[in-house]
Image (tube, rainbow, N blue to C red):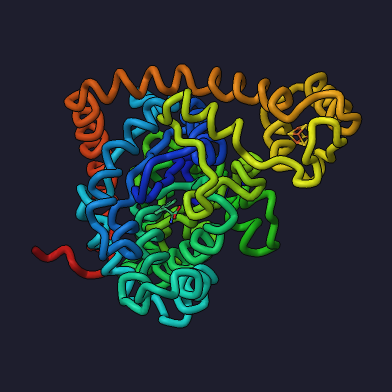
Length: 406
Ligand code: TRP
Ligand code: SF4
């Protein structure tokens, strides 16, 4: 269970870069998780098209082609627009505005130290990633997260450093701009709005924390504050900060929500990834999928049918670990090591399991792709909702940075 941080909302935000067709790796690693989260939390999921441009600036066609297909794939996987807000980053200009404003206070060293910066530059060495935009990639991500005041950010372990940076940027922002003129007076006024009883309790808990470092009192006060119905958002920010003796918390710090899903193995035993060419696409033709599985490599030492094999060095085995029950796995190990079954036979249950899994996904994908207007309307509605939230945050941000004079 994630502990609740100051002013932290239970809002979930995540994004995906539109850089090609989605495959089973996305389905198992990300989408199934989103589908679960949407039933537990308020969720915002978006197409990170500006992020895609930071690395694919020389190939914008791929981005353009992938945006709508990606949304269709999300919907096909079961992401439900009734339960989650789906939108496109570049439609919400406020992301760019917040990115710019955050850039004023973000030390270059913080960005240069993010591990993905040097890693990706080394990995994509044939592309010039010495750009301003690429260096700013994680800060743009911070803006994406902070603008929705998201508390939870489901990401893979390669993205945890970006959430960590987001926390540091938020802390710095609050520290620099959370101390508005007359802050203490405003905070005391806000306490009154909680009502006599709750206000008194808040003061007591605050004193316990500030004077004795009582962590439990801090937790209690936060919970009390979270539940206040008559206190405006701005006052809540003040009171969360006041609690700890600091300023107003304008941008709450998010937490990474690590996906427990195991990595989906590809057709060669490595992690499934477009760059390894070992994928099964979500919308690939079932006949093609069957062919791919039937021709995928097996234990190289098992040349003839009557050679015994070793599942531990066979790329087919990790797929059984994802798709097969104990009984089937036992049958595989037993049959393989005794040459009792052939490799095609061994693969058959996988072919079936994967096609059964993809059948409803492909059916929904067909339905949605037949109705592009429906998909566009879903995204338009999502953009409208996202923008409302983003705009509300930006009003606070502009005001705190002295930009509310126009
Ligand atoms: N950087 C993420 C990735 O490559 C995509 C992303 C952009 C994102 N903005 C985000 C993820 C905000 C979570 C939250 O996968
Ligand atoms: Fe691999 Fe199965 Fe063939 Fe054994 S029987 S080598 S596990 S495909």
